[in-house]
Amino acid sequence: MSTTTTIPAPGNLIGGAWQPAISGQTFENRNPADTDDLVAHHAASDDRDLDAAFAAASEAFPAWRRTPGIARGNILYRAAEILASRVEAIARELTREEGKTLKEATGETMRAVAILRYFAGETAQPHGEHYPSASPTTMLYTLREPLGVITIITPWNFPIAIPAWKLVPALAYGNAVVIKPASDAPLCTIRLAECLVDAGLPAGVLNVVTGSASALGDRLVTDERSVAVSFTGSDATGKHIRDLAGAHGKKVQLELGGKNPAIVLADADMDHALTQVINGAMMSTGQKCTATSRAIVDRHIVAEFTERLAQKIGALTVGNGLDGATQVGPLINAKAADSVAEQVEQARGEGTELLVGGRRLDGDHARGHFVAPALFNDVSPSSRLGQDELFGPVLGVIPVDGMDEAISVANNVRYGLSASLFTRDLTRAMRFVQEIQAGIVHVNSETAGAEPQVPFGGYKGSSSYSREQGKAAREFFTQIKTVYLDPSPS
Ligand code: NAP
Ligand code: MG
Image (cartoon, rainbow, N blue to C red; front, side):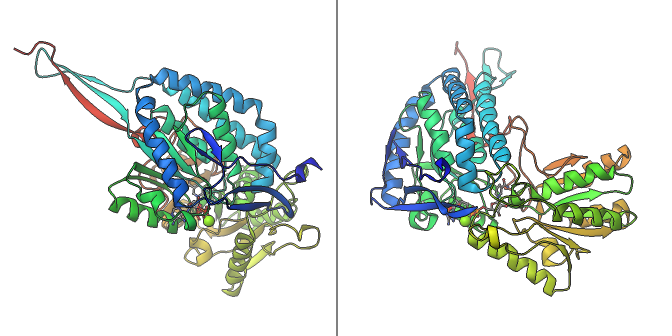
């Protein structure tokens, strides 16, 4: 079967050339739905490869910076069309590499196309402002200029969309990039880079270095040729990077975890809320920073809502994402699957009632990292299950008495990425929008979802107060130059 042929991955992209790691070493990547399926070998880089990548990026930056934005945008438009023509093939690879269903993988790849198109368009937008000056002969205005070489570090859970939403604006605004994708899913970043290279991106402007973070070491963050670091991933890595990058005087952007609530009030359209809450919790196997992990439900409807949730969650089809019937794929690796199953056991041990799922699946599923989608009843908001991100297909129901308690429970976590409210009451909806501590707020839709034209990011422990995508992206990827231009000094 063609899907089980090992893909000949091209290695690192450094200075415009695809090449093996200097050490000659590789690491393998297996399909999380079927570990007999060896997806690809990738370059196992070390700091010598990184050194070459930073050298190439800093050499390429001056010419790229001087390239008119419109010309940069034209390359991004071409890359968008090239990627669009490859969506089907890349989506299949994404599913093999990461595990999500083919439908989700296709949607994610199309999102990368949309990101390329959006930022191609942004290159033709005004990138400065004109101000009145106190001096009659001075023209006073601002320019947005690129920062220089940017380091981008990405996670595996959106292996093409997250690299795209960081590196595309970085390039659009005239920066050069060194990107290190997650070791669990580097292939999609390589595919995206191939589209950009085929679209005419000059050599060295984008460099891709694969390999484990531990082998690459702190140089990724500390190399003095890079001026900024954009990171998405776990809290622990994020804190390490923030401290290290900060100590080296770099601009840092972090997108971290979430513990996203969906509040369901007694007047909600229950059928709609059920579908949205389940999609939010279980799509991408719950491995989304914006996944719904707490269903905060009004006590008047909680019994019926929970019973119907359990029935529907128990009926989800778990399997290989390439199979059209699959609704929920595997966890990314054995460690993640074990960790989710362990946290489920821990919560049961603490007395929380598990209504469905939560166990590693064997039998037909034994070759993959599968955990049955799980639902907990009556979760204590202050328990570990009520506070910690599991990053898996696990949802907890928290019963509350009305809107005040719902908002207080929703806000009482260290995260603040996304949040949903289900109601027909406009007054309550407006109060929710005002009082919820989250960077992305949904009324009557699931907590996940990120259109490229609007800002993405969280409150509190979910982000570093910067935002990605949309016009907000330029705040991170540019700096402001203020110009006092007086043509006739007297
Ligand atoms: P992770 O372990 O932090 O890894 C993320 C990236 O950082 C990977 O490329 C990883 O490389 C690299 N890395 C690890 N240690 C590093 C270090 N000391 N220095 C520099 N780079 C290092 O996170 P993950 O397990 O891939 O992703 C899951 C987490 O990401 C979840 O907690 C989730 O909430 C969060 N997430 C957040 C968002 C958001 O936008 N807020 C989006 C998606 C995911 P290796 O792969 O080689 O280890
Ligand atoms: Mg990791």
